[in-house]
Image (cartoon, rainbow, N blue to C red; front, side):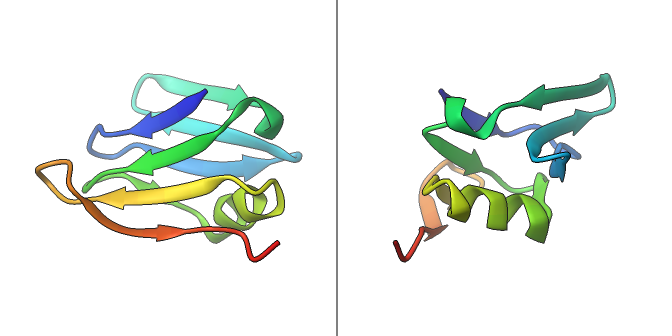
Length: 78
């Protein structure tokens, strides 16, 4: 699964070893082993705990600009 966070105000958090996507409409829990990559656009955010969880599971985290073009990335050193 490719987790895409492109709505303003969306947050990616870590709770109890799971990713949690939080929006105005509610929360959704996602197991890290189901995620291949995370794409975050402007207006969305990721907590440092969620970023570290992604790195622990060797999940690439991509940041994109307002046009969807890559701006940077995090990846595991493993």
